[in-house]
Length: 192
Image (cartoon, rainbow, N blue to C red; front, top):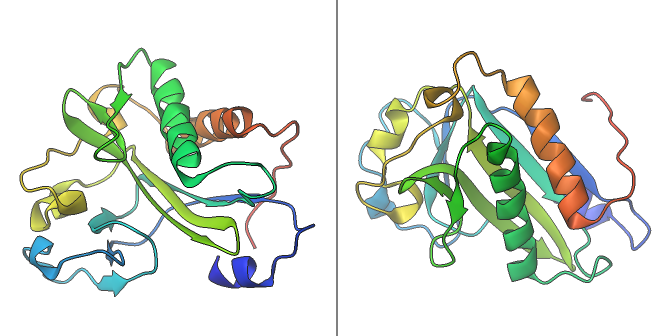
């Protein structure tokens, strides 16, 4: 995604990448090492997004948003709001009441975090993106202060919806992102 952002031109179409990560703690540019309580055998990777430390692993939907925010006439705060609203819209399809907190980006259900955001803007374009907990092992979140918040409870979609599948959520969330950001057409392509 860094290479894509560096090499893109004014005419490069925006891309939204959907993926899962192997177990990893990612440590943002503003991160404080004190928020890593016990990494154990999970790698800690310094990355160039904003925010503190978080955990990524199988069963968590990761969406990287390579968007020319200048071309789309979006500011960073507006983009964050649109991403959060897209997650909220997706969760509403499952009859879940979710909300965003302006002072702590992400999406929450009953004070517990279900989705995190971490972006970087370079050359007027965004990269990195969001993570939505769907069907994952949440134990590693106990080894950190998620997003820099001590004792922050973390939940996932399968806690509320039995039998939920990551693929269902991928499609719903991508459609909400495309609609909310204002794309008229989405072209789906399989990985590399």
